[in-house]
Image (tube, rainbow, N blue to C red; front, side, top):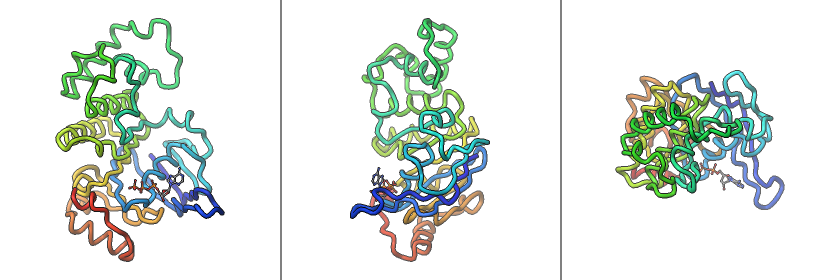
Length: 265
Ligand SMILES: Nc1ncnc2c1ncn2[C@@H]1O[C@H](COP(=O)(O)OP(=O)(O)OP(=O)(O)O)[C@@H](O)[C@H]1O
């Protein structure tokens, strides 16, 4: 469960560069909810994910993950509840380490690495099985350095790392935007499978309206630092891109610019 209650965040307050990024955003995800998040450029989507992850303190409001009020919890402690995948495939993995070492690190999130941490045969068997699920042939490359993988392969490994120990919450910030369309499709399919099978509570930012409609059981639209539309279930299933554009227009009072990359999706 994720509760975001009336959260505000202003960057550089009181200065000429003041930016009100979140202006009373509220939303609640139930266990297993998979919400896609769309919105115009600068709507506050990434800021929302960063606020939830604890990258910076919020000015007002409350954030609860599961049973824990994390509003004042520092990012490194919050990390034990959260799996994250960023847009940049270089960010989630350690390039100089093997795939197996990266996965071993993710298994021990927040714990000390034991002396024999890289020699656990049972664990390596498990890694191999998990890599088979990705269907990218990576099970044969357990000992390859992650830096040698393609962007899509790296994102898939990052996704595995983010979910290898079931997180209370999975945050995906345009995690396929930097990939070519075919690879993006593959990583999205893996994402969808992991989220469904793990019944993971998930927030996925996307610029692609089609993806926002195809995936998840909830769709949240942000504008001016607020969640202005929240459709779910059957209502979401019936939505088409044209309906989404109309909703966007109406909910933003006609003032939101729809980015081209959102339309192209
Ligand atoms: N760390 C920061 N310091 C200062 N301003 C920031 C910071 N992070 C975000 N902002 C500003 O807050 C506003 C919201 O940004 P945010 O990145 O959350 O939007 P977004 O909806 O993710 O947009 P996009 O689709 O363009 O990525 C923007 O005006 C942005 O410039």
